[in-house]
Length: 155
Image (tube, rainbow, N blue to C red; front, side, top):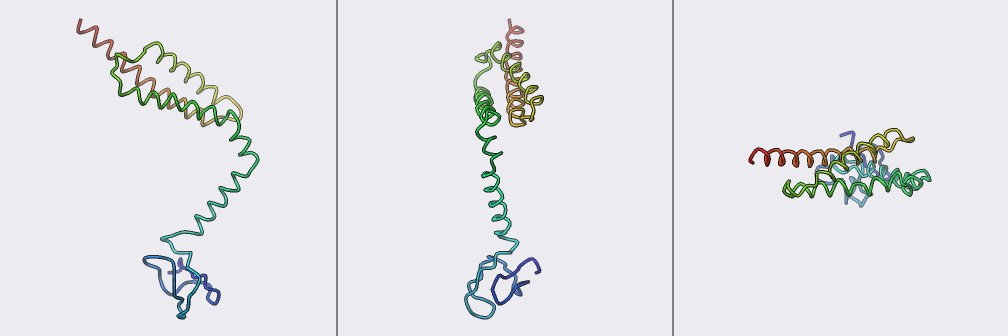
């Protein structure tokens, strides 16, 4: 298999033995201890190490730190609380849902979705947060309206 290579110092290139269970060769092809094979398709250590080093370099980037310490990041993170609260409220009976508050949250999320799209640079994290909140609150509002409509029919 040409995708399996050995990193033994004496032998570079394709490994004559295909790693089936693990890519760690404890005994070399010549009968002595060798460096483990790290190019197996089963355990792509090289790809994981490359991704990890790129991610670490990205975190060290001043632009990332500036973004991470700004309201463009922490504002949306805090606003996910509205979404989680709405999801928890789905378990409550519809008569406990506040119509005016749910309507206010719908309007609030609509306004901030527009803001997140128009602000430069675009804040897609904020847009995703408010789109999720809008969906949850509209569902809550529909539950409340259905309950009110069915309550009026029964009278």
